[in-house]
Length: 376
Figure 1 (cartoon, rainbow, N blue to C red):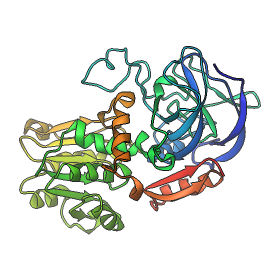
Figure 2 (figure 1 turned 180 degrees about the vertical axis):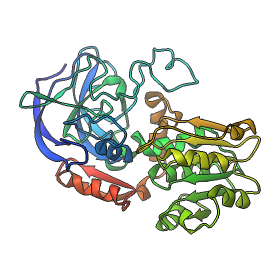
Figure 3 (figure 1 turned 135 degrees about the vertical axis):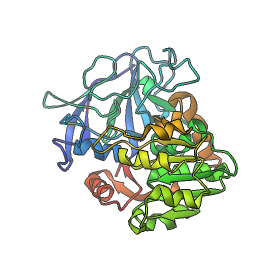
């Protein structure tokens, strides 16, 4: 059963784009079907930065961001049977209740009860578990891992092996899983296929790795940072395009390189304008485009109907199509067996007190994943 409220340190965002402040916060005990987690490591995802800047997004503050995290169960609420104190877990920004219409269907990973939470509160009672001097502090994705302790619904965490490296396995709770899943589950890239990936961040490079493991014959990376090509080679990138060096539209360049268009294209930038370019880069008849990036500003997608009429498919993907609690242990097992690797995606290991440095590096495009270590 749960204990009482505890006080700990958390990185609190007080306003859009303002530096995070390390504050003492009160963390409530877990309520029924919730667990309280001692966060061990958490990594900074681009979507944390996008929401923190609140460009085109609701400004919900004060708030504790963070959703890619590994930790240890500190206490459990009433009714929780699948976790015990001391279990190692990954947090899940979208949960799995296993009983709703979507959870029981093989066609979806969009839980109706524990889906993506956008209001800054808990799923169960629409309230927060954090406070400072009696005033509520809002959550992010019902996870809020930029805190030494956090409370999540038991459906928003998954038990993992205690042999998994906590400072690396945390990447599987969002970015890496999203990229791999887009290739393996959402599209099922096949041997010999031609693939183009827009944006070579963590998600894009993970998609490249997935395509490499599926033995795609050509994997084209598109990015404005030329340093990403050298980095991308290790993940399977065979060709690189810098849009700033092109004198003709990118999709035309790709069509020339792929004899009429790629079999699969993946938009991992977070700019809706790129979706149309990705769609144009696909082959007539069967080309599939998957959009994974979270838009920084304009959320509306625009594309000529003829692109679809000619047989192309545009698909969206949340968390790579994985059912988070059911499927994530499979990826953890692959990591432990060294069938997949995340080490090359971690460019910085940063102590919790320096979390603003991680935000700076992400904003300036100088990192892939910064892993934030909560303990000194």
